[in-house]
Length: 62
Image (tube, rainbow, N blue to C red):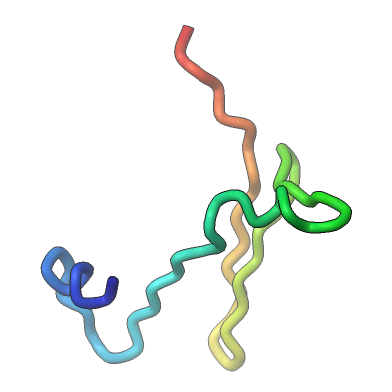
């Protein structure tokens, strides 16, 4: 995957690639757990900070 990304983006030392969790992981948890509208996704790197993104229900085109 990193090799493929480097064909598209010029990575520099310190760059971070966040791939997330594969689809379907929440389905196999007991109890099941899914992100939902209103949740907040947080990624923290010690000494750098926290990136927070809201989870928003995507509206489908009509």
